[in-house]
Image (cartoon, rainbow over all chains, first blue to last red; front, side, top):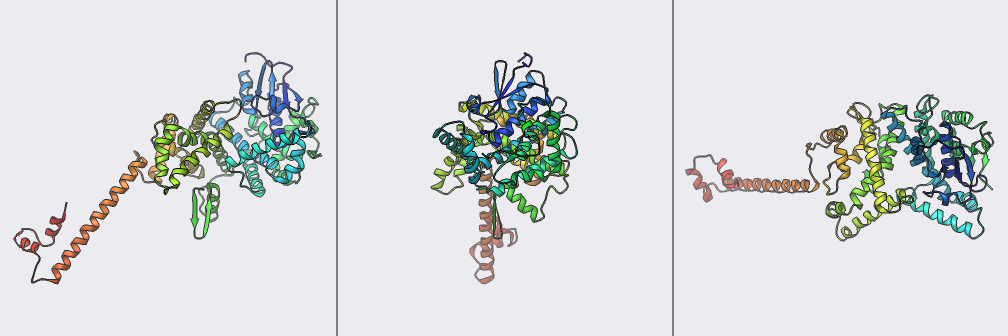
Length: 263
Length: 261
């Protein structure tokens, strides 16, 4: 852990154009934003089996030196052990607040994204099933897709989201965005002058929602209702993603034209 | 699905919906809060659900000693037979399922690893709540709000229920401001003494109260009958009254003396 950050650090995710889904893209973008904010170079590598390579089964994961760490939480701790941290300047109460807001994003936004792409029948049929197993031949692509759907639906049932309708889920997204918008206010970042991992996480999710084309625009409309959130996304994009290496997945979607998730 | 609010003909379940309903009826504890504080409320509730709830479920429903000696008898005593044989087991399985689906999975492969992780998270969550509460009486100053209600709802069972396996309770007791917070709400809004009652103690207290009420009722019925008898047959006073003439006390007090335990 005491080794310096190597030049050849790599971040693995699924294939950008054909395979990756909304929730995974959001998580991956959050990690990329966080590493950019820490000024740690990382190369984005796209692999069809990224999920299976990951030590926790979730993307993204980073390969640094001879260590592999997945998901934003553990990555933040790993980076902190190497001596880089964005939240050192916060006092105890602010740190508690930051952790609470990160849980809010995970609890509401991420779960809503998972619900939309795996439990909403229209989206599942038209987008998810086509994309998720696309690198694999038939019938493997269908089997993998159904298996993942069954897993996600089990989890939704356990936490009580299976009974929700799409309108209720969108209501929850709206409530979450309203809370984030009220917390952000007119500040540039959530904790005023300096970005933290919370900013990276919020950016990852909101930017992905805004720039991903789904069967309907309802999800992105919910976010667009809050102008300070869209300004926040644009600001981070301009500061940390434009002009950087072309592999960054955000630059592809930098222009207002929507990046399409439809085939 | 509990809790359930039944108001006239409307039935509402789930805390969030109940609070919404109450808000529409103009009962709002968050009226004084700023927009940012309202947002903080939502964030901290999410923190409780993600970090504290798994360990809470585990302590009540999955930890074998706790479940067998406290939770199961407690719930089964209130559920009619034969459901009392089936429902607690079902709730226990659902709790374990929820824990494993949301927190299990690689790199945590065994139940003990998952348990260790959820208790670590719960203790961290309790620490965060303590830091946020600081020295103030409630989370947003001097008046309680929705967040206080939610935090109390999660913490009070951990704080008060007497389990055999109590690692969360012991951790909570090391955070004096959080304990004081729970005690304050219990004394102000639930009118319990600070020492509180365990569920078994409360039941015996109820039973004792019932017996006492019955005894007092019986005594007052007997006194009434005595009075009636006195009024109806003055020429033939009941035997007891002959003794009354000899007794020093008045008529009214003697029947009571005879009846008192």
